[in-house]
Image (cartoon, rainbow, N blue to C red; front, side):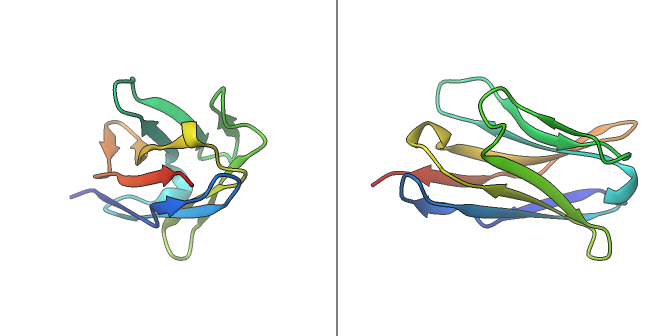
Length: 114
C-alpha cells in the first residue's frame, strides 16, 4: 500500500520561508517521479515543482526561483523548500508520486499572512 504523508505546513509571514516534508511508504522515491502540487480556495490544483527519477526538476509558472525540491533517498523523503513567500502562496500543498499509478498525500495547509 502506497502512502504519502506531508508535514511542515503552518502560518508564515510574507517574505518568510518554510520547508515541507513528504515521507513515502510503498514506493521508492529515488526511482519515482515526485511532485508538489498546491490548491488554493476556488482555484484548480497546480504544479509547484517536480523531480523526475533522473533528477530533472520542473517548476510551476509561479514558483521558479523561490521554491525548490529535494529528496533524501536514505529516508525515502521528499522536501519542498519555500522562500520569499507571498500571500498568494497560501494553499493546501500536496505530495504526489507518478508511477504506473498516481498517488496523493492528504495535504498540508500553508498560510502566508501578516
